[in-house]
Image 1: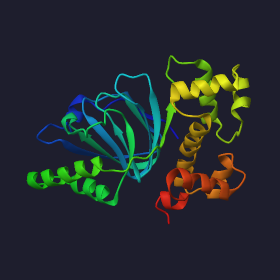
Image 2 (image 1 turned 90 degrees about the vertical axis):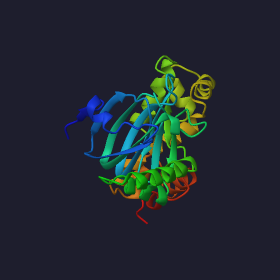
Image 3 (image 1 turned 135 degrees about the vertical axis):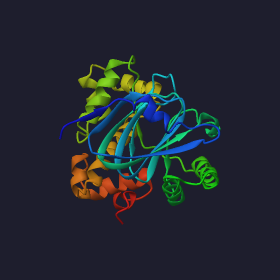
Image 4 (image 1 turned 120 degrees about the vertical axis):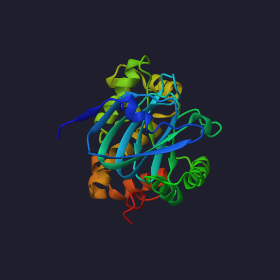
Length: 272
């Protein structure tokens, strides 16, 4: 399939959805085909990236101006909060009905300076759909916006991101992380992987802790989830996804998935 690549929307187009203090939440709905890309860009407002259907991958700075970035997988049950000024890009993994909430910086919940993943409740899903109506009356819009902001502020957080090393960080760590992303089915130990990149296990464990704030095992689990979710969305059998993710059995993969996501693969994507 040909790669569809777009830079940030033209200013005039984006301005049509620009939030203000008077209209702090604006909804932009788009149907996007798989393999569509939006190249890195930023906004002065907050953004909540959400899909009614399909899956997208969002790569964003964890905080505006920082060297730290993470890759987030966004199925319909999750949404990514992108802080004002944070550079981000989007890659559509599966045909998606993309619902972007542009939120004025003045409406940012307290303490939400960085990017995060939240669980999309059934109520939030319905509220977004209700806002996405042409010619909506202003009083109704205001009431719905109050509920949307309240629901976002009380949403359950959920880690669904793969933090990446800083661009100017240790090259060995970045190379190891990329190798896992390229071949998640390879189940090397940290000692084996470190040796391939000329580092000791102890050194690489320290780099994971200092640069990414996690362990190798925890980071690899997030990378495997990022690899598995699009496959599950395409309808691949869990047994096939488990094998492609380096698991010897479907039950072991399901146990990992349930432990990480709080529900088995079928329920997570709304198929059971």
